[in-house]
Length: 259
Ligand code: 0O2
Image 1 (cartoon, rainbow, N blue to C red):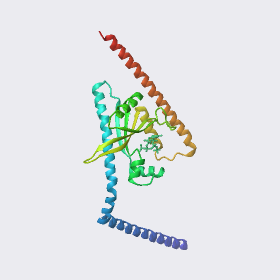
Image 2 (image 1 turned 120 degrees about the vertical axis):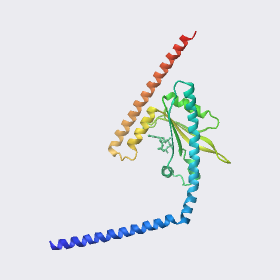
Image 3 (image 1 turned 45 degrees about the horizontal axis):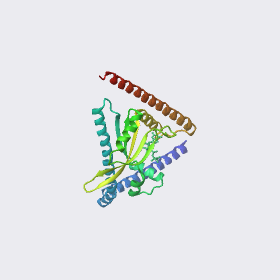
Image 4 (image 1 turned 90 degrees about the vertical axis):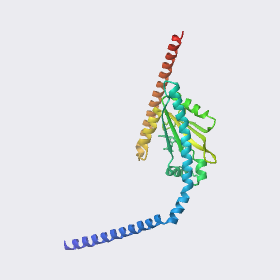
């Protein structure tokens, strides 16, 4: 019994010593970090390196504002002119540095600002949610016919849904931003989709994002999600048909009333 007690005391002592060593190391590390972060020369160098990145982010934010404004103007006009506004919501986001770097790494793009601007199309993203499938194409046309917009790429995941079930219309457009002494063309990814398509995409993202789905369940889950997308697409089509019927009957009613 006495021996066991001795061994236990020695072990406790060793554990305590190791813990003390670790704590001292941490304190040294954090002092080093404090010194590092309060060294003005170092801070100056860091901020000089960050400056071009921040400037580029600001340009992308301006491009988002340009595209958002275009949709807001359309929304305002639709509200005034018609009895319904096809635009439900407009959401925007600037892709995080982390996601940009991961994407560049995945695609084997060399890490430089020039390569980032040239190769990554969705740093600035604007998403427009509308009521009916027809509205998606009508809004895309309204944007693309504006003379300062250049279409670089169009991906129609409504006519050609992804295997996952994802549906949306993606337009990569170029829009100029007007700086103090310069006009700069910037790329923006515009995603236009219906409420139902958006419901699916956000639910799927929530269900899958950062979740470790067990390998043996992956196929069944993907299939179920694809089926949900199919159901929502058929709801979209039925709503579209109902709308067509209702606007037809309203048109006939107007015609009948005409003197
Ligand atoms: P986030 O959070 O929107 O930034 P790649 O990105 O290389 O795979 P590509 O050609 O750049 O392909 O883009 P793609 O596939 O045309 O469109 C990518 C964007 O569309 C995604 O951006 C999503 O916003 C959306 N998307 C595409 N497929 C799916 C899907 O199966 N489910 C959901 N929920 N969204 C999808 P990010 O960068 O992945 O995300």
